[in-house]
Image (cartoon, rainbow, N blue to C red; front, side):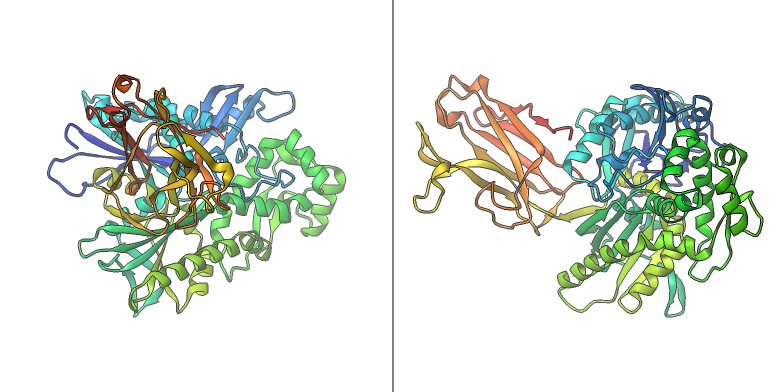
Amino acid sequence: MAGYRVVCGVDLGTHGTSLGFVPWIPGKEQPGRISLFETWPGGRPGIDVKTPTAVLMNGDHVVAWGFQALTQAVRSRANRPGSGVRLLHGFKMSLAPKSHADTERTSEIGLADNEPRPEKLIEGFLTHVYATALSELRDRFPGLREDEVRWCITVPAMWGDREKHLVRQAAHRAGFPRGENGDQLLLALEPDAVAHNAQVSGVQYVLDVDGQTRGSLERNSRFMVVDAGGGTIDITCYHTDEHGYLAEVDRDGIAQSSLYVNRALTDLVLVDRLGGPDEFRRLRKDAPHALEELLHEWEIAKRTVTADSTDTIWLSLKMSLAKHLTDEVIDRITDSQDGDNENIWISADEARSAFDAVIPDILALIDRKLADMTALADVEEKPVLVLMAGGFAESAYLRHRVAQHLRGRAVVAVTPQPRVDVVEGAVRFAYNPKVRARRAQYTYGTDTCMAFEHGVDPIDSLYRSPLSGDNCNKRFAVFINAGDLVPVTHEVRHHYYPTEPTQDALEFDFYRTKERNPRYVDNEGCEEFSGCKLVVDITEAMHLDIDKRGVTLYIKFGETELHVRAVLDFNGKEHPVSLQFSTR
């Protein structure tokens, strides 16, 4: 951390983005009071700690971002037929594994969860976030240089290496610095950030525990973070040691969260209320922003939904939408709502039905992870703490459903301020990462040549090398096995040599599989690792004998991202390595 003056965390959320920072104090293990950025352009100073993760695009050009993207979208007639201007939000979800790829479903206007190149939208958005944040930091810390700020951007735990790589590259193109050692910008899993913050903030129990309403993350204990954000549910399971350091023992996630409650309300209630599928499609073309206003009201109102609420939610039927409705639809609304044609009535049961379309998948995921944690326990331990965080965790109905579902099996708690846990945790992660180990989700390795075993290896894999004779050319060389608990400082080391006398580069494809001890890279269930190719140039060693042209790969798996470095054996020189991830 030498040379840094400021540590800054960025919660790049599906719905909103927040930023926090703290001065770096040498010798201090934990940061002091974290300041939140509250002067987003177009927002309410001192009130809005998040800016919408949204961009207004004209072709490939970012016209506006954040709050200003929303306000300018109406004037520019964005998302209307014939308009080249588009308002896009939720684009981070386009990187996620798709559980809602059905394009026939309705969705929020501008919800870009199936964009072909979401990394370009992320880059455009982060370009403005970085410039705005750096300007604010320089006002707070006069004379601050770019190389004096350490940054941390959060990513969903459900993302793989490809998705994290794309975000990192987008961030660097947006201006976030790499630093001399490549550690000036860190990526943190969102649940890791939550865990870091909860160790300081403590927790609040959803149901009293032994008469207590508050508690803490105890040392030598197990807990699960359920990070319920705008677009994803990320679950990560941890053990803490006697010093409070974290070992990640499992993680998973699904694209099923707050945004999909909005989608469910649209599909289950609003489409029918506003005239049916054909009429709704017409409204999406003719009055996209009026529909967006209606859903924005629901976004606020849905926080009042509880397990026993009976109150009707009224969504304003403003003239901007009403003027596009047919007389037949207006008459039907009026007749069904005791003569009220100025609102759309959402009954308490209808509101809960939107949640109930999403919550079962969340409960099923929690059940699977809880079972896995129980299976990993060496001895009978106290109940697992299930810690809910993120903006969706502010929903009283969601908390109630989870607590009732897990009653007697786990203790359910929330953090004091779910909406800012991730950003404050990102600051703490960058200041002093406390994750010490992670359990490998896959077996990772590369394809390599090994001695051919006649009668065992398939004949189509036989490769006759002029240097080493008969080889099987599709063997799986394991770097790390699925299920292994890998310390963050652990670095796997493997040696490789050319198989041809004229070979001036070593090329590797990475693979992963849930199988613990795979023999071949084309085994069932084995997939090419994120479309990634590793290329090591050995031209400067070509004048040496073959046995002097070796390369040693060092691969580190225990951190948030995969780190690879290659060293030429003959001179110990660390050589540039190209990690080429496919864009889709």
